[in-house]
Image (cartoon, rainbow, N blue to C red; front, side, top):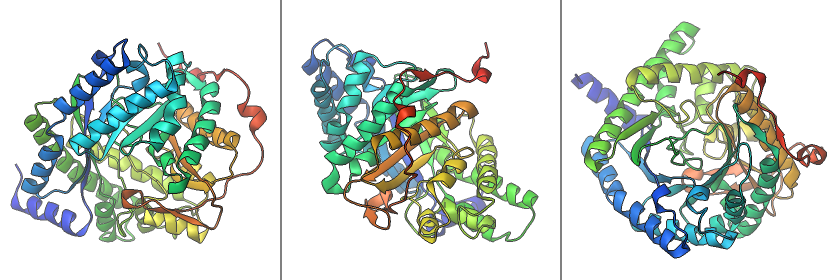
Length: 454
């Protein structure tokens, strides 16, 4: 039973501490839209998406207004398109036609993003997968709402290094195709290891084949709420620190649970999961880095950062799982650079490097996220960074990802402005030593020994 104190407390979290529901994401299965004829396939895709999600934005806005809870994004995730288009797509251009259809559907619905222009190539690349992957630069350059992801590895499969090598080239091509907009296409492209089927966050969201025909997944946020709570217990013991984070995560997740259940009921679509991730924004005070500062670090990146982030991630999950029976997605703390003002400040101060961010990804939710690097960075170097991050995910049995942006025409010391939730980012230096002989080897890195559980 919710009492008046809890209502007041939630209102304060919304009004003063940047609490929001970051996204309501409807996942839609498109496997039944596959057809040997491209035009027919596109028509089926458009019809199914615009039918099932026709009320998504209205319902999200209605719930936000009635409950007083900001719902920032309404999104759709779909079955990986390399599976849907395998019968009718004979060239990358055919897949771009599907991309246009998806973009048109997103515009019709009024949603913020559509995820699932994706391929899962953890162990091998089919001809259809390769065609889709090679279409990504054009698809992202010529659409407004589309997000793309490619899964290159997993704990059970190992790492497909042929795919890793190819994705280094694709990231560079995407940057070139959108260089007149500071290579923003790369902000809508992520390379994953151990990707979950039910992630509501972009750019890595897709509707996995293990899911229902349609589901509602909700991603909550609230770094500002956690920061405020920690300010009230400044200097207390680790026990008090952990209890405070855990209790705060519980409250945040309950708000998401309420929104998810209401959206599910009104849309007539089953409730899937709540993603517990602390997702920052460029707003001052809504920062994971600021939480780390409140825990006791001068800047994110200082010695002790990885330990502090591990503590934060674990307590968020412990609190969240008590608030909802269905927790999934990524769930923890995001550490994107451009979307987190505290992270940006840490980079500018010289406290935070890509290497330290990589260490932090061993214990956080995702990986190297929204990092701008010099536009002249070789594709093989990008592939090496992807391989390193995939190895962390593979060995630690967790999701890791790389969303990196080589900004064509810019170098270290400059900054790039993306706008909105994507914020701005300083161009970070990368290790310039060569790894091409490594990434150009053919084949895959085998799964680790501890994956052999059967």
